[in-house]
Image (cartoon, rainbow, N blue to C red; front, top):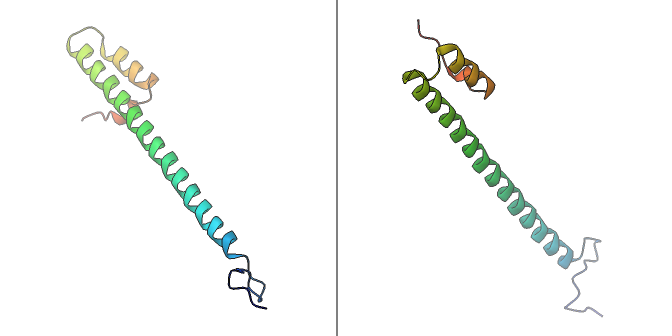
Length: 89
């Protein structure tokens, strides 16, 4: 006869416990992906801060006469931030 604890549908749908487990794993995957994205955003922030530090270091060094303009621009090119510097006309 009908068992009230039976979660398998006669229509051939999946077991309810399988559906719950699948929903739980989706939450875990979503949480893991969110953690990954959060870590990547934090790393990007750190990389941006390093770029800011490089720009500020060259600003101070050039202003104090420790390097010439060509050396400052070469360093900024080497660290990948030269594209952020716009020549004023």
